[in-house]
Amino acid sequence: MTRAFITGISGQDGTILAGVLAGQGVEVHGLVRSADEAASHAPALPGGVTLHVGELTDGERISELLAEVRPDEVYNLAGISSVAYSWEHPVQTGLVSGLGAVNVFEAARRLQDGTGRPVRVLQASSAEIFGNPDRTPQDESTRVAPLSPYGAAKAYAHQMAAVFRSRDLHVATVVLYNHESPLRPVTFVTRKITAAAARIAHEGAGTLVLGDLSVRRDWGWAPDYVDAMVRTIRHGRPDDFVIATGRTHSVEEFVAAAMERAGVTDWRDRVSVDPSFVRPAEAAEQVGDASKALAELGWSPTVPFSEIVGRMVDHDLELLRRNG
Ligand code: GDP
Image (cartoon, rainbow, N blue to C red):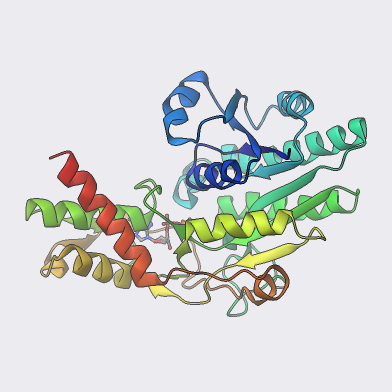
């Protein structure tokens, strides 16, 4: 039986991945930071998942856990998930999303060396490693030149993945563009918008305060991106794959689509801009070219933009109806 170890199992992608792997009969283990986090997140996970407490920044603990679990597949999804947060906490971001990933690679390498059994690692990389990209769309050969603390930490981890690959560890990466679902917290602009649209529709009142409405992002459906992770780690050769839809929409277009779905017609009067939500620096547009993933993994996105927005708004409306 295949055994998998997932760091970041309590996040959006980790939760979805645990469900996918458990459905395939994989024995799933996950890393959480505390017993409290384990208790609060366990109900969202499929039965049979084993949670282990540890910090990604504690290399010895990560090595100890991998030696105990002896996984065949290690998915490193943990990290500081929010670009906005990374500007406020650049050191913590580097420690967790940068060095934390290296702790995982090193633990996997030690396990492989110690047991003689192959270990495969999947690093969740990010479009943020390209910063303000010098070409559109971006692909695997685009220059790595991050602009945010989040992007710089992810870039370091991305480059260390290649370093460990040259030491005979099977480390593959997925360069993920924004990918959303109802599991997104409201710190992300998509869920912030769909939750507000549902609230305004439900109460007939309220406002939504955002940052830059003009930025364009390539938004996909998170379960598709998790599927890409599994295909990537099981691909014959450890490699990098851009995972994206190839289409962009502005934040304003996201707001319009969400408000329309919720049935809010006067939304322009309800949306305002607060400069404190505007990032110190970021790309005006990010869009990925996933042709390599299509050619080598048979992967392509399955849910169009309007449907992603619709599913998230419907979920938020349903939550409000259920909770009164
Ligand atoms: P990110 O790409 O991982 O940072 O995902 P987010 O969902 O946090 O942000 C996506 C884009 O939305 C970024 O370009 C933000 O600058 C933009 N944005 C505009 N207004 C807001 C806001 O109020 N909150 C957040 N989180 N992002 C916003």
